[in-house]
Length: 324
Length: 300
Image 1 (spheres, one colour):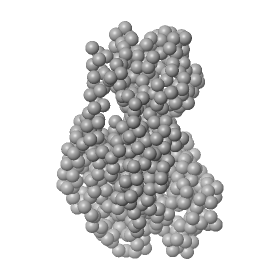
Image 2 (cartoon, chains in turn cyan, red):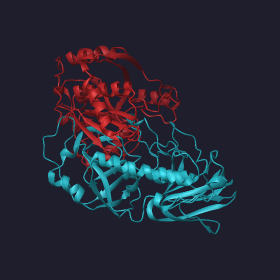
Image 3 (cartoon, one colour):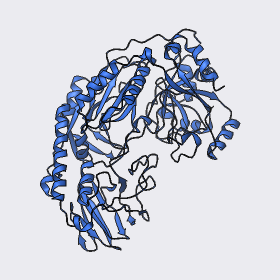
Image 4 (cartoon, chains in turn cyan, red):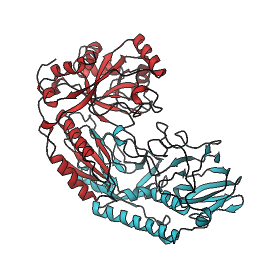
């Protein structure tokens, strides 16, 4: 068991998400930066779908009631066990009774803490991911708080095999030099935008507002304008309204200013969507902090697939380096 | 009430769009119609039945549908071709499907939604009227009673489930000229009671949980559409009750009946009054009023 001494700002249990329920209005949830979650798991010899703790901006403080092997990945976060600093991207031992303390993230927004064996809360619909809106998954369906006790699953690899494992920098996504561009496949209902506004969507440096969380990233920037039309039957009167549609995860909807829908987003509704952040780029967006900027880069679906290939190769190389 | 059939809508060529590298979005029409919705349901049913490799989510919507897939298993272009082929081979004329006819008791002008709507009057088109008074007036009804009568006189079909888990969007099963239409609030409310029955655009909804919302508020149902703990008998297989294609028959109840049903729900004993029938779209289009009567008879 792990006892939570301080839940941090917003810490939840997440895995690769809850799939196959979108049609009843259930978003996937799951790690916002899936790549960092995978790296954290790989370091301690876990499966990719084992649950980790996603710590947002400020980390949690934890007491381990048993010996364990842990690793941190994602946003850079200073951490200590006793007086010993815990390096990022390294499998380290925590002994029974020891406390892990974490500070604020200094680069990026979300840090993943993996524990060999995974956080073993009961799965709900085959996933341990927390979905706070209706209070399911994770630990009692909510963010962690002082006094919570988290079970640890059975370790798959012997701890002396993974201890000290370090992820080589060349196999990690570069958080520091990460540009502000976020690749987007423009489309869906982008016909609703004027040509000028469609260009503006990708020419603008959008600022991440304080309302940027697991549900969506609300962005601030110039007004975008819709093509005037007589609204179709059932759409509603506002020019931003369409007859209610399903929203892809990562889609950019335009009530007025853009909102990029993230892992806990609403699954559908009546606002025009104008493009979708490609799958691997959602990981990068999830590390953007409030007041930082993002710029959408229009890519074709083939380019999106290529980027996914790059991320996949990087992950495979990391797994190989760790196992080799 | 018109005794006429529902004019068939000739749908434009569908628009196939990529949603990033892992979704395909298909818009069947910009406007809502039963033709567009039935086609979305028929195609998504065909996709689900085909059990296509790599598909992770199949989501019918009001006049469109969406498929999510794993791009590590199937290339987006291959997925697109697959969906096109299935869609082109799906004929509505050959389709009928199982639909549940469901009794949905509603306490109209209930104290809870009334309190909420009064609280947000400054975000409404008509601060001096209630949502029901406003909706009645702009749809040409003499008053609230007449409007509620029209709202419950013909059933509403669930044409999409989403936004949040369990929220049904429902389209009243009447010809276009009898459809009611209302705008959403000028600014969305930050609060809506759970189980509120609302209306926006041309869709009625039931809010599963307390939260934000922009639809006009008419009443509250004592029954649940979402049961996270799955304690109620109708939720044993899924924490969500409504499914696309369900026919909801709103029934006006008084406060006593509301309290009685609510007690049963809270005791974990309430069971939906529902029957499953084979829904024949052709018959529905031909004479919706007569067909609706036959449908709702099974739960009378």
